[in-house]
Length: 307
Picture: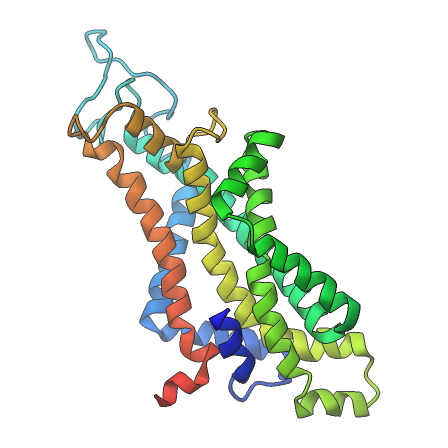
């Protein structure tokens, strides 16, 4: 991977090798001054707040079939003060679906991101520092998983073990953890040759203490970066699975909204409010991961500052 080759040749956080964990976190926070990183974090925070307060923001139950004052089915109503994004062909409020659909989408995204960052960091750290049999075992397993097609694998796993958000997360994590693991391994291989690691050995520190206290904090920026990117990938995968009809039919998400819009021929009928809002939400979340990656580029690749 190109990113692995670049990181293998690049130093860790500038001037922070061997520094305490608190200094690493302060560097991550300070980098939010970059407009790209700030924009990405703001987008994530905005969607998280929407998901938390979805019950207060949504005027209707997203699964309720609504009727007009004269008892007629409130189907395909245009946007109005009562229905901000109109209603679906079956008379459901689109805005309520959009707001409450953020919850399952972000649940998958955030859960998968934490799991991918945690497993990938642990695997990369163990592989790069311990080497030998552990390194070969973990990297060969990573090679196998990286060779599997992403979306078809997620669909097969969900179809075999059941359509639920937890199973979607499981399938996503199984395929995404090798990406950070390989890059973090490359970084750990360079860190183990640094003077602060040799100094820790001379003072009598155990190998596990060196790995967890001196080496691990230096790879936190990579863990954070891949976690933020995994959010977008996970939400995109969940939306794709739901759109193709393999998701949980009882859960309203942005993917199920797109599936419903497609089945209702929303584009042919000019009902853009049925699919544009959830599509934009998915695009914004994926862009947020890109913005954060772009914002932390100079932190991860210090040579870019001199170019």
